[in-house]
Image (cartoon, rainbow, N blue to C red; front, side, top):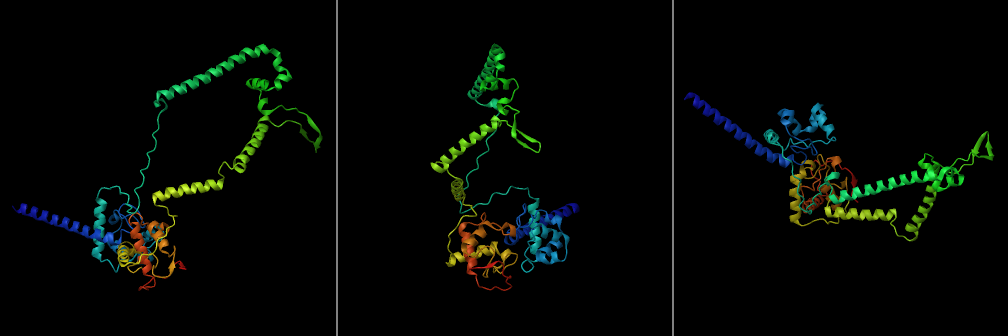
Length: 395
Protein backbone atom coordinates (compact mmCIF):
# COMPACT_ATOMS: atom_id res chain seq x y z
CA UNK A 1 0.00 0.00 0.00
CA UNK A 2 2.85 2.31 0.91
CA UNK A 3 4.60 1.67 -2.41
CA UNK A 4 1.37 2.32 -4.32
CA UNK A 5 0.93 5.71 -2.63
CA UNK A 6 4.52 6.66 -3.50
CA UNK A 7 4.06 5.66 -7.14
CA UNK A 8 0.80 7.63 -7.38
CA UNK A 9 2.44 10.68 -5.82
CA UNK A 10 5.41 10.48 -8.21
CA UNK A 11 3.08 10.16 -11.20
CA UNK A 12 1.06 13.22 -10.14
CA UNK A 13 4.28 15.22 -9.72
CA UNK A 14 5.51 14.23 -13.18
CA UNK A 15 2.17 15.09 -14.73
CA UNK A 16 2.28 18.47 -13.01
CA UNK A 17 5.82 19.07 -14.26
CA UNK A 18 4.91 18.20 -17.87
CA UNK A 19 1.83 20.40 -17.66
CA UNK A 20 3.91 23.32 -16.35
CA UNK A 21 6.49 22.86 -19.10
CA UNK A 22 3.78 22.79 -21.75
CA UNK A 23 2.27 25.97 -20.29
CA UNK A 24 5.72 27.62 -20.35
CA UNK A 25 6.09 26.69 -24.03
CA UNK A 26 2.68 28.19 -24.83
CA UNK A 27 3.64 31.46 -23.14
CA UNK A 28 7.06 31.31 -24.81
CA UNK A 29 5.50 30.94 -28.25
CA UNK A 30 3.56 34.18 -27.77
CA UNK A 31 6.72 36.03 -26.66
CA UNK A 32 8.73 34.49 -29.53
CA UNK A 33 6.21 35.51 -32.21
CA UNK A 34 5.91 39.03 -30.81
CA UNK A 35 9.64 39.73 -30.45
CA UNK A 36 11.83 37.14 -32.16
CA UNK A 37 10.07 35.76 -35.24
CA UNK A 38 11.01 38.80 -37.34
CA UNK A 39 14.70 37.83 -37.36
CA UNK A 40 14.72 34.18 -36.24
CA UNK A 41 13.28 30.83 -37.22
CA UNK A 42 13.54 27.52 -35.40
CA UNK A 43 14.80 25.49 -38.36
CA UNK A 44 16.38 28.01 -40.76
CA UNK A 45 18.72 30.99 -40.69
CA UNK A 46 16.93 34.28 -41.41
CA UNK A 47 18.54 37.56 -40.31
CA UNK A 48 19.88 35.73 -37.28
CA UNK A 49 20.76 32.06 -36.76
CA UNK A 50 18.31 29.17 -36.55
CA UNK A 51 17.41 28.62 -32.89
CA UNK A 52 16.94 24.84 -32.93
CA UNK A 53 18.64 23.25 -29.89
CA UNK A 54 19.90 26.64 -28.68
CA UNK A 55 19.48 25.31 -25.12
CA UNK A 56 22.11 22.66 -25.93
CA UNK A 57 24.58 25.14 -27.41
CA UNK A 58 24.35 27.74 -24.65
CA UNK A 59 23.41 27.67 -20.97
CA UNK A 60 20.35 29.59 -19.84
CA UNK A 61 22.33 32.31 -18.03
CA UNK A 62 24.29 33.12 -21.21
CA UNK A 63 21.07 33.24 -23.24
CA UNK A 64 19.48 35.65 -20.75
CA UNK A 65 22.47 37.99 -20.83
CA UNK A 66 22.65 37.94 -24.62
CA UNK A 67 18.93 38.59 -25.11
CA UNK A 68 18.88 41.41 -22.60
CA UNK A 69 21.92 43.21 -24.01
CA UNK A 70 23.81 41.52 -26.83
CA UNK A 71 25.98 44.61 -27.40
CA UNK A 72 27.37 44.45 -23.87
CA UNK A 73 28.14 40.73 -24.21
CA UNK A 74 29.96 41.30 -27.52
CA UNK A 75 31.95 44.24 -26.14
CA UNK A 76 32.90 42.07 -23.17
CA UNK A 77 34.83 39.82 -25.56
CA UNK A 78 32.65 36.73 -25.22
CA UNK A 79 33.97 34.41 -27.99
CA UNK A 80 30.59 32.83 -28.81
CA UNK A 81 28.82 36.19 -29.04
CA UNK A 82 31.65 37.64 -31.13
CA UNK A 83 31.54 34.67 -33.51
CA UNK A 84 27.78 35.11 -34.03
CA UNK A 85 28.25 38.85 -34.58
CA UNK A 86 30.91 38.26 -37.25
CA UNK A 87 29.06 35.41 -38.94
CA UNK A 88 25.80 37.31 -39.41
CA UNK A 89 27.21 40.44 -41.10
CA UNK A 90 27.80 42.31 -37.81
CA UNK A 91 24.07 42.90 -37.36
CA UNK A 92 23.44 43.40 -33.65
CA UNK A 93 20.44 41.87 -31.97
CA UNK A 94 18.12 44.43 -30.29
CA UNK A 95 18.44 44.65 -26.52
CA UNK A 96 15.33 43.31 -24.79
CA UNK A 97 16.38 44.06 -21.21
CA UNK A 98 13.61 46.62 -20.79
CA UNK A 99 10.94 44.44 -22.39
CA UNK A 100 11.53 40.85 -21.30
CA UNK A 101 11.92 39.42 -17.84
CA UNK A 102 13.90 36.29 -16.96
CA UNK A 103 10.66 34.29 -16.90
CA UNK A 104 9.80 35.46 -20.44
CA UNK A 105 13.20 34.34 -21.76
CA UNK A 106 12.90 31.00 -19.97
CA UNK A 107 9.48 30.51 -21.56
CA UNK A 108 10.93 31.27 -25.01
CA UNK A 109 13.69 28.72 -24.44
CA UNK A 110 11.05 26.19 -23.36
CA UNK A 111 9.14 26.84 -26.59
CA UNK A 112 12.32 26.49 -28.69
CA UNK A 113 13.19 23.27 -26.85
CA UNK A 114 9.73 21.87 -27.57
CA UNK A 115 9.90 22.82 -31.26
CA UNK A 116 13.43 21.43 -31.57
CA UNK A 117 12.28 18.05 -30.31
CA UNK A 118 9.33 17.94 -32.72
CA UNK A 119 9.83 16.11 -36.06
CA UNK A 120 11.11 18.43 -38.77
CA UNK A 121 8.35 19.49 -41.13
CA UNK A 122 9.03 21.16 -44.46
CA UNK A 123 7.99 24.80 -44.17
CA UNK A 124 5.26 25.75 -46.61
CA UNK A 125 5.95 28.65 -48.92
CA UNK A 126 4.39 31.82 -47.48
CA UNK A 127 1.14 32.91 -49.04
CA UNK A 128 1.08 36.16 -50.95
CA UNK A 129 -2.39 37.67 -50.44
CA UNK A 130 -2.15 40.27 -53.21
CA UNK A 131 -0.49 38.17 -55.89
CA UNK A 132 -2.00 35.80 -58.38
CA UNK A 133 -1.31 32.14 -57.79
CA UNK A 134 2.06 31.30 -59.34
CA UNK A 135 2.09 29.08 -62.36
CA UNK A 136 2.94 25.47 -61.70
CA UNK A 137 6.47 24.78 -62.75
CA UNK A 138 6.62 22.43 -65.70
CA UNK A 139 8.13 19.09 -64.90
CA UNK A 140 11.47 18.37 -66.51
CA UNK A 141 11.04 16.13 -69.56
CA UNK A 142 11.94 12.56 -68.77
CA UNK A 143 14.78 11.03 -70.75
CA UNK A 144 13.71 8.34 -73.19
CA UNK A 145 16.06 5.57 -74.22
CA UNK A 146 16.69 5.30 -77.97
CA UNK A 147 15.19 1.81 -78.20
CA UNK A 148 12.06 3.06 -76.39
CA UNK A 149 11.21 5.49 -79.20
CA UNK A 150 8.09 4.78 -81.30
CA UNK A 151 8.57 2.06 -83.98
CA UNK A 152 7.95 4.56 -86.80
CA UNK A 153 10.89 6.73 -85.67
CA UNK A 154 13.15 3.71 -85.25
CA UNK A 155 12.22 2.56 -88.78
CA UNK A 156 13.03 6.02 -90.17
CA UNK A 157 16.49 5.94 -88.57
CA UNK A 158 17.09 2.42 -89.92
CA UNK A 159 16.11 3.41 -93.48
CA UNK A 160 18.32 6.52 -93.37
CA UNK A 161 21.28 4.47 -92.16
CA UNK A 162 20.66 1.86 -94.90
CA UNK A 163 20.53 4.55 -97.62
CA UNK A 164 23.78 6.14 -96.41
CA UNK A 165 25.47 2.75 -96.30
CA UNK A 166 24.20 1.95 -99.83
CA UNK A 167 25.58 5.25 -101.18
CA UNK A 168 28.96 4.58 -99.59
CA UNK A 169 29.13 1.04 -100.98
CA UNK A 170 28.16 2.31 -104.45
CA UNK A 171 30.92 4.94 -104.40
CA UNK A 172 33.52 2.40 -103.35
CA UNK A 173 32.43 -0.02 -106.12
CA UNK A 174 32.52 2.73 -108.76
CA UNK A 175 35.92 3.86 -107.53
CA UNK A 176 37.37 0.37 -107.73
CA UNK A 177 35.73 -0.23 -111.13
CA UNK A 178 36.65 2.93 -113.03
CA UNK A 179 40.07 3.85 -111.61
CA UNK A 180 41.82 0.80 -113.17
CA UNK A 181 40.13 1.62 -116.48
CA UNK A 182 41.78 5.05 -116.48
CA UNK A 183 45.24 3.53 -116.23
CA UNK A 184 48.17 5.93 -116.19
CA UNK A 185 46.02 8.75 -117.52
CA UNK A 186 45.13 9.64 -113.96
CA UNK A 187 48.66 10.98 -113.55
CA UNK A 188 48.26 13.46 -116.41
CA UNK A 189 48.65 17.01 -115.19
CA UNK A 190 45.35 18.11 -116.72
CA UNK A 191 43.43 15.38 -114.86
CA UNK A 192 45.29 15.79 -111.57
CA UNK A 193 44.60 19.51 -111.46
CA UNK A 194 40.89 19.01 -112.20
CA UNK A 195 38.39 18.76 -109.34
CA UNK A 196 37.68 15.08 -110.10
CA UNK A 197 41.39 14.32 -110.08
CA UNK A 198 41.91 16.08 -106.77
CA UNK A 199 39.00 14.16 -105.24
CA UNK A 200 40.41 10.91 -106.57
CA UNK A 201 43.88 11.54 -105.21
CA UNK A 202 42.39 12.80 -101.93
CA UNK A 203 40.89 9.32 -101.54
CA UNK A 204 44.37 7.96 -102.17
CA UNK A 205 45.95 10.16 -99.50
CA UNK A 206 46.86 13.31 -101.46
CA UNK A 207 45.52 16.43 -99.67
CA UNK A 208 46.15 18.84 -102.56
CA UNK A 209 42.40 19.50 -102.78
CA UNK A 210 42.60 21.31 -99.41
CA UNK A 211 46.19 22.54 -99.24
CA UNK A 212 46.84 23.49 -102.87
CA UNK A 213 49.98 22.62 -104.78
CA UNK A 214 53.33 24.01 -103.79
CA UNK A 215 55.02 25.44 -106.89
CA UNK A 216 58.36 25.91 -105.18
CA UNK A 217 58.99 28.91 -107.45
CA UNK A 218 61.00 31.68 -105.78
CA UNK A 219 60.19 35.31 -106.48
CA UNK A 220 63.22 36.70 -108.27
CA UNK A 221 62.87 40.14 -106.69
CA UNK A 222 61.85 38.98 -103.20
CA UNK A 223 65.22 38.32 -101.58
CA UNK A 224 65.96 40.25 -98.39
CA UNK A 225 68.97 39.36 -96.22
CA UNK A 226 68.94 35.84 -97.56
CA UNK A 227 65.22 35.39 -96.86
CA UNK A 228 63.39 34.21 -99.98
CA UNK A 229 59.67 34.06 -100.74
CA UNK A 230 57.96 31.30 -102.68
CA UNK A 231 55.23 32.13 -105.17
CA UNK A 232 52.68 29.60 -103.84
CA UNK A 233 48.93 29.90 -103.98
CA UNK A 234 46.91 30.33 -100.82
CA UNK A 235 45.31 27.07 -99.64
CA UNK A 236 41.99 26.46 -101.42
CA UNK A 237 40.13 26.07 -98.11
CA UNK A 238 41.30 29.56 -97.06
CA UNK A 239 40.28 31.15 -100.36
CA UNK A 240 36.91 29.39 -100.24
CA UNK A 241 36.21 30.72 -96.75
CA UNK A 242 37.29 34.20 -97.87
CA UNK A 243 34.90 34.19 -100.82
CA UNK A 244 32.08 32.80 -98.68
CA UNK A 245 32.63 35.57 -96.09
CA UNK A 246 32.33 38.21 -98.84
CA UNK A 247 29.08 36.72 -100.06
CA UNK A 248 27.81 36.47 -96.45
CA UNK A 249 28.75 40.11 -95.75
CA UNK A 250 26.82 41.32 -98.80
CA UNK A 251 23.79 39.25 -97.83
CA UNK A 252 24.01 40.48 -94.22
CA UNK A 253 24.16 44.11 -95.34
CA UNK A 254 21.19 43.72 -97.68
CA UNK A 255 19.10 41.80 -95.10
CA UNK A 256 19.70 44.05 -92.08
CA UNK A 257 20.66 47.49 -93.44
CA UNK A 258 19.08 47.79 -96.91
CA UNK A 259 15.80 45.90 -96.77
CA UNK A 260 15.53 46.20 -92.96
CA UNK A 261 14.15 42.66 -92.80
CA UNK A 262 15.94 41.63 -89.61
CA UNK A 263 16.10 43.09 -86.09
CA UNK A 264 19.40 44.65 -85.09
CA UNK A 265 20.93 44.12 -81.64
CA UNK A 266 19.29 47.18 -80.08
CA UNK A 267 15.87 46.14 -81.37
CA UNK A 268 16.37 42.55 -80.19
CA UNK A 269 17.34 43.87 -76.77
CA UNK A 270 14.17 45.95 -76.56
CA UNK A 271 12.05 42.97 -77.59
CA UNK A 272 13.66 40.78 -74.94
CA UNK A 273 13.17 43.45 -72.28
CA UNK A 274 9.49 43.73 -73.21
CA UNK A 275 9.10 39.97 -72.94
CA UNK A 276 10.84 40.03 -69.57
CA UNK A 277 8.56 42.84 -68.40
CA UNK A 278 5.48 40.85 -69.40
CA UNK A 279 6.81 37.80 -67.59
CA UNK A 280 7.60 39.66 -64.37
CA UNK A 281 4.29 41.51 -64.52
CA UNK A 282 2.48 38.18 -64.48
CA UNK A 283 4.60 37.07 -61.54
CA UNK A 284 3.95 40.39 -59.70
CA UNK A 285 7.40 40.05 -58.20
CA UNK A 286 9.68 42.34 -60.17
CA UNK A 287 11.95 44.36 -57.85
CA UNK A 288 12.61 46.83 -60.70
CA UNK A 289 8.94 47.50 -61.46
CA UNK A 290 7.83 51.09 -60.98
CA UNK A 291 4.87 51.81 -58.70
CA UNK A 292 2.75 54.95 -58.40
CA UNK A 293 1.10 54.56 -55.01
CA UNK A 294 -0.03 57.60 -53.05
CA UNK A 295 0.18 58.00 -49.29
CA UNK A 296 -2.84 56.75 -47.35
CA UNK A 297 -4.20 59.37 -44.96
CA UNK A 298 -7.43 57.94 -43.54
CA UNK A 299 -7.33 57.08 -39.85
CA UNK A 300 -8.32 53.43 -40.29
CA UNK A 301 -5.46 52.72 -42.73
CA UNK A 302 -2.91 54.46 -40.51
CA UNK A 303 -4.15 52.55 -37.45
CA UNK A 304 -3.80 49.27 -39.34
CA UNK A 305 -0.33 50.34 -40.42
CA UNK A 306 0.59 51.10 -36.82
CA UNK A 307 -0.56 47.65 -35.63
CA UNK A 308 1.40 45.93 -38.37
CA UNK A 309 4.47 48.07 -37.60
CA UNK A 310 4.35 47.32 -33.86
CA UNK A 311 3.93 43.60 -34.52
CA UNK A 312 6.60 43.19 -37.18
CA UNK A 313 8.93 46.20 -37.37
CA UNK A 314 9.30 47.50 -33.82
CA UNK A 315 11.79 44.78 -32.86
CA UNK A 316 14.41 46.38 -35.13
CA UNK A 317 13.17 49.98 -35.53
CA UNK A 318 11.73 50.64 -32.06
CA UNK A 319 8.18 51.05 -30.81
CA UNK A 320 8.12 54.66 -32.00
CA UNK A 321 10.34 54.10 -35.08
CA UNK A 322 13.20 55.80 -33.25
CA UNK A 323 15.71 53.25 -34.58
CA UNK A 324 17.50 50.37 -32.87
CA UNK A 325 19.20 47.80 -35.07
CA UNK A 326 17.46 49.46 -38.01
CA UNK A 327 17.61 53.17 -38.80
CA UNK A 328 15.51 55.95 -37.33
CA UNK A 329 12.38 56.32 -39.48
CA UNK A 330 11.14 59.61 -38.07
CA UNK A 331 13.81 62.00 -39.40
CA UNK A 332 14.39 63.39 -42.90
CA UNK A 333 17.24 61.02 -43.80
CA UNK A 334 16.78 57.81 -45.76
CA UNK A 335 19.06 54.99 -46.85
CA UNK A 336 16.85 53.78 -49.69
CA UNK A 337 14.58 56.72 -50.50
CA UNK A 338 11.83 58.38 -48.49
CA UNK A 339 8.97 58.41 -51.01
CA UNK A 340 6.02 56.13 -50.29
CA UNK A 341 6.95 54.04 -53.34
CA UNK A 342 10.55 53.76 -52.13
CA UNK A 343 9.32 52.61 -48.72
CA UNK A 344 6.91 50.15 -50.34
CA UNK A 345 9.77 48.67 -52.38
CA UNK A 346 12.11 48.43 -49.36
CA UNK A 347 9.48 46.76 -47.17
CA UNK A 348 8.36 44.35 -49.87
CA UNK A 349 11.74 43.18 -51.15
CA UNK A 350 13.92 43.95 -48.14
CA UNK A 351 17.65 44.73 -48.07
CA UNK A 352 19.21 41.33 -47.25
CA UNK A 353 22.77 42.70 -47.20
CA UNK A 354 21.85 44.96 -44.27
CA UNK A 355 19.55 42.56 -42.42
CA UNK A 356 16.25 44.02 -43.64
CA UNK A 357 13.81 41.15 -44.14
CA UNK A 358 11.70 40.93 -47.31
CA UNK A 359 8.07 41.06 -46.18
CA UNK A 360 6.37 40.20 -49.47
CA UNK A 361 5.69 36.67 -48.29
CA UNK A 362 4.06 37.74 -45.01
CA UNK A 363 2.33 41.02 -45.76
CA UNK A 364 -0.03 41.80 -48.61
CA UNK A 365 0.14 44.84 -50.86
CA UNK A 366 -2.42 46.76 -48.81
CA UNK A 367 -0.63 45.99 -45.54
CA UNK A 368 2.72 47.14 -46.93
CA UNK A 369 1.18 50.37 -48.22
CA UNK A 370 -0.46 50.97 -44.82
CA UNK A 371 2.87 50.48 -43.03
CA UNK A 372 4.69 52.80 -45.47
CA UNK A 373 2.00 55.46 -44.99
CA UNK A 374 2.14 55.10 -41.20
CA UNK A 375 5.93 55.52 -41.24
CA UNK A 376 5.61 58.72 -43.27
CA UNK A 377 3.01 59.98 -40.79
CA UNK A 378 5.72 59.83 -38.08
CA UNK A 379 7.99 62.34 -39.82
CA UNK A 380 9.18 64.99 -37.38
CA UNK A 381 7.72 63.25 -34.31
CA UNK A 382 11.15 63.35 -32.58
CA UNK A 383 10.75 60.32 -30.26
CA UNK A 384 12.96 59.88 -27.22
CA UNK A 385 16.33 58.16 -27.69
CA UNK A 386 16.16 58.62 -31.47
CA UNK A 387 19.02 57.11 -33.43
CA UNK A 388 21.42 59.38 -35.31
CA UNK A 389 20.41 60.17 -38.93
CA UNK A 390 21.59 57.74 -41.61
CA UNK A 391 21.58 58.08 -45.37
CA UNK A 392 20.66 61.13 -47.46
CA UNK A 393 18.24 63.91 -46.72
CA UNK A 394 14.94 63.65 -48.55
CA UNK A 395 14.46 66.21 -51.30
